Length: 136
Image 1 (cartoon, one colour):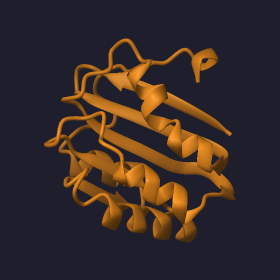
Image 2 (cartoon, one colour; image 1 turned 180 degrees about the vertical axis):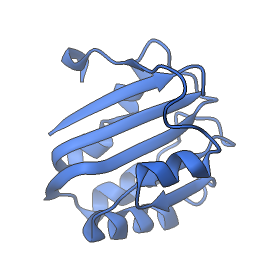
Image 3 (tube, rainbow, N blue to C red; image 1 turned 60 degrees about the vertical axis):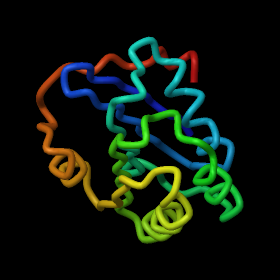
């Protein structure tokens, strides 16, 4: 599994993309990897993309724990999770319910295009700066 964090300062968006097998520690590590990016701004919106995730073992305990933690983003920041696979979509909807107090502006969609559209952004605009993959 790998996590790639890219920040597009022009569109004020953080894109977190998972590939391969996802485990509890990977989810719990999202805030750490994101805050490590030198361009991170808590006022930005966030897209977490599971499109390239091939499976894994994520517990409901990890989903609940992450959802209850204080967000690294401002309360009014928007969060969109891309979960095209049925199991990922179900876990993400569970996360959405648990996170209604900590992340009130959370939406779950099936495609990256839907995610950008829900934020009113263009997928091709801007130029993101990826986090050095040796740091994730």
